[in-house]
Image 1 (tube, rainbow, N blue to C red):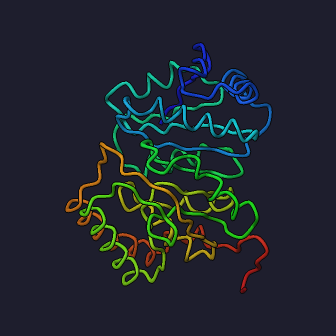
Image 2 (image 1 turned 180 degrees about the vertical axis):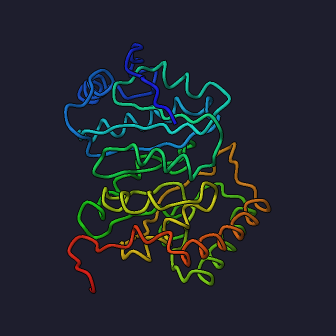
Length: 290
């Protein structure tokens, strides 16, 4: 795993990234783009990416526009998962001072990419979001509020919770989601309506506990994280979000269902062998035996 230095090329203009032209927002973006943070970031945003040369630039633009407008120190981590296109080069050419590209020579799967990105993050709150921005970054505050207030350790975006706004989801993907939900409830006793939405926020403590023991690299890593969280006493809240079906999705119903079922057994086996034990320590405010 390598990190690419992105701080030497000239930063793109705000207009090139699609940022709004308001003077305060523009100045915040320019500062973020050209000057390394002198403090640890409050927020880290991790984007797992595999062959995203067509989508990565507008995704970075949307994220930078929204996070800079909040006025809090933040960093962006692109966790490239063995891309064979120009994804890494495009991000590197931007020269953004507070963006890190993590690269690996081979494609390991989304779970591996997210794990590497989260473990490199320095923020107090760590969001991972899909590169297609199917859940717009403007939904970020909905996840941050319950974690920042101490109500939850993890907030997960949900396309199935009451109040969710789902646009363009195909009938096949709806059926797949329903089927996976029933499997999760029967096989793991988890009550989450949507384990697979690619928009999840972790407190620093939750991330430090979960990701070192998380093992699945593929499609089912979200479920594994939530299963470990349930075993570890971490508080998870499900937040209804707006979601748009994005062209170019790599989800394939039959293939991914088979993999999901296979991974259920792997998660159970890992649990039986005690491989998740490192995450099972008291949460803040708890003592052993609570």
